[in-house]
Image 1 (cartoon, rainbow, N blue to C red):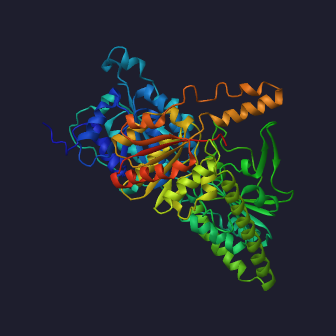
Image 2: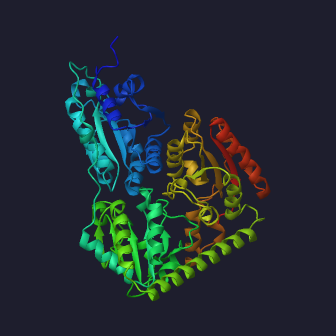
Length: 582
């Protein structure tokens, strides 16, 4: 038998390259097109741990969530063309969310003389990367084992270079299984690492600082800046210097939600005379208020409000999907990584502030006090709204969020994606940058990404909580098996309104607009008749599970028991709570 500590096969080279890239896990659903790589992952010393998944999309989404929560790149492996197509939604979501995911696919064999009849032909594309090229940063299909190091070194650099994103490498099945006559040289650490981050044009950044200091009512809007956790402290520091309102778009946890300068969109933007965008890919949903009935947009800002944009600007623009949104005309646009630009901007603002007179300082203090009072009043209003809805049945979303908060607040906790229609953000205290990996990306994305977030925090002792919509879990119930099989500790509390409610809301709008029968707006969107029993499903996959719970007074005890299972036994637990639509 060969010594598997040596490079005996092409797939051993791949595993060595993954180790050089410090990839901790490879998520996969098994496929014959990467049987050679699978063998090396299982048997080669130093190989990443295999996470067996029930669907290729989930494999990508686990890597997605892991990268968001940890800042480290994870890999996923897909079976030939069919697996790539199954995983394509996951790749697309990672592209939109700007996370580095290394996707590997088995291919071929590309040598037609080596193919098995039928299956190797029907599953093989001539250029596999074509299927996902429009929503990956880069792809490759190396033609020899000797070309593997170049492909993986570049893939690691491209995926992690900001703005980050997924990359794809198709690995010929014949090359994976090729016996080697000599070792293949490995690239150095310098070859594998991404280049340095992008700094700002000094003159442009100085102009931005001057505009911020001149503004009387500045607002700071941020979306992705806290992919670097240090931004969680930098942004409030800048806001306090300026007396600026802060708004978090939620793609990452950018701000402490109870900071007195943290505001909501409408209040903060309606009176702003300058808006600073920090790593905002598409500011149009925030700067504009959409009428969902007519699809028309009204600006939230006043005429003459200046825009200063610091971020990647056109570097993340796609020729295929228009995820950049409508064009925002910035008065000052600075192309830079906010991880570099933010501390430099703070220094410039501090220097300019030092030359200000006492009158300007007093005005900033008054502005901070006014924003703090507005923030306190808003939080009091949310608390009052939650109290007024406390005993409603089905359970009101604020009651669900409040009961979960009373359980987890005594622990070191993490929220994965969903927020129970925003109520977690209103009632919980997000006081650390790791408390939330970023908002949900929509139906059929949350449970997979949540598993990745929980995997990233495994072994830390933190209580990872997923406020899980029912419609999302209906797409991927098999995800529950992954958590049980790999003992990924996670507390799932179902936000179960027994509907695809976002679409229900749209059907209500259409019915009102057209005069249609309001009694039929549930057709095609309601998840009922029969209602799924998620607790029974979860127990069948090996979870601790309780529910469905309809009595709001029973939530806290059930969540407490489930949390103890997660923390004490290191295994997943689910509590199914039947909730209102809003």
